[in-house]
Image: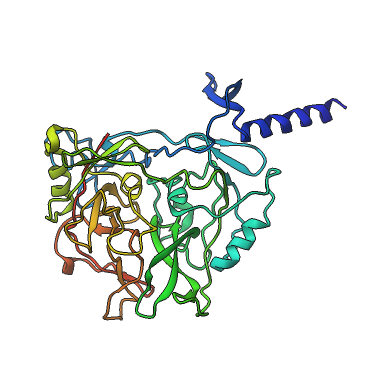
Length: 408
């Protein structure tokens, strides 16, 4: 009898949490175990647009070597590890779900590790019941990217020493046995700028938790809605929580060449300077800027820069042009984040077309990944110095990319 009562009490508490009537606070005891406290408050929104830190805490040079923390004015100052943002915080609910304590979003802890066609993925999440909840859905690409962990790294020699771009203390993850690099998960966000490649294939964005990149994947249809070749598909990690909250910007033009996003608390450079830089020079340009009288500008990390991508815009560039100006519609913008698999590269966000070839033998580049993709480029040198190609893909390399500065 007592077990039944306790179970019912726990169920009631879980329901009150989901309604926002109860809130949770976690403290660490001396033995490092989490103690959960509850308190009654007025109902508050269950989802907020809080950008968490990428988790990158190591400094790198152009060659991908680990270095000590650079001082202000030194080479490589201003990279991701230099600035610590809001730390990720998760709660294992013990019922197959994980709650992000910063955003309020609840996640499926263990996927089925089966590939789903894009449209079949919606049916899959509609039929889920996990932890007693049935209102599961596909995450948007910004929601999916919110659980990125940038200290991931894929070891080509074997996955036993690999770290997914995901906190696997809370989220279960398995590498594909045949293609360890293929750990892509669907988002609900379609690529709306006219289709992929030359054949106008319809695409939808996904994030690859095995290799740490965003790209658009084939849905199985052409952009006009006609049926196309069925791709093997992507994996699914379902989410629940209020829609159209996380990732929704609230921009304000400050009238001094800067734009504030009230949703995240970040201030942005309104117009890029029109110049492209290698990574080290991009870091220096940002940290030495005095735009609008501020001296604490920096290069954004991947989560910060991805937060201002406009995935719903049907024209290039993928940014809200009523607030921002890209001097080149084909703009790729640097981030301060080193890419984990190839540490001599740094991540960029493509606000214009994200070019790649079908494979290393192909000669023509297409917008294969989609505007809004997150890829990586060598930090310095010449394009001919690098051969980042495989039988599956060959991204276009530029090495010199644009800068859009940010400050808190």
